[in-house]
Length: 144
Image (cartoon, rainbow, N blue to C red; front, side):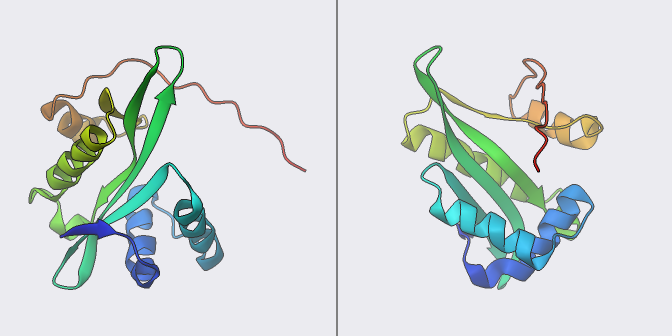
């Protein structure tokens, strides 16, 4: 039910990113992201499929932390098709990410979730034992 993405999954992946962000990615933006993941030594993208249809998406990467000499598994993307939510698919994807973290000798698993998702996403993460530990501060760089 969970496997690494294949390029044939593009339409479903595009649809799931729209569920996550509320915006449809352009074909070129989607291809850039998928190519980036395929060529990355630390990033992976997994799909949850059922009856030949991709209904869930999990982005996973290894984060190395030199400040404490450890590594964590990061859940960079998690989304389930709206029609399939509350059926255990998100939990299966989270469990899969935690098994990947164990496989790569990670100290734990973490994720970043934005403001405005306090319910139900944040409650879901808390129900799985994840606790909020701080804020993420971002400064965008101007590009010509």
